[in-house]
Length: 137
Image 1 (cartoon, rainbow, N blue to C red):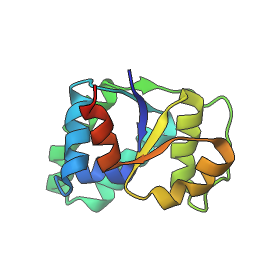
Image 2 (cartoon, helix red, strand yellow; image 1 turned 120 degrees about the vertical axis):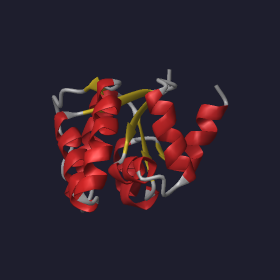
Image 3 (cartoon, rainbow, N blue to C red; image 1 turned 60 degrees about the vertical axis):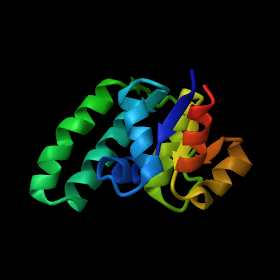
Image 4 (tube, rainbow, N blue to C red; image 1 turned 90 degrees about the vertical axis):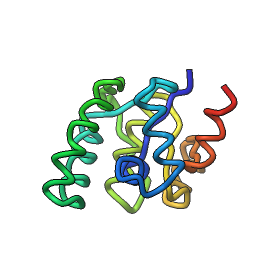
């Protein structure tokens, strides 16, 4: 099964239906078509970003969907951290989770993870590339 850590930007776009590929990833996550991994820090990041960026009513509707997705995820304990690899703290949370889970990263901004790919050998896919990969299985 494909192992992946979903960046917050993909999750946000998928839950708000603002990007077709991201929406398909959220549907695939819900349908367990791949194995999603999350750390405690990444779960908190998801909740923080969604609750800040959505209206109170939008967050209330989305919170249940997020909880459902998180229940379908494997919790990853962070035994080792590679920080800082990125200039963005939030991206380092995704990197730590992916490295500890031995999983790929799915993001809308591949360039943000360029150093992690070069230094750590992480596989980084765009949302569209990941949907293509899922369609092959």
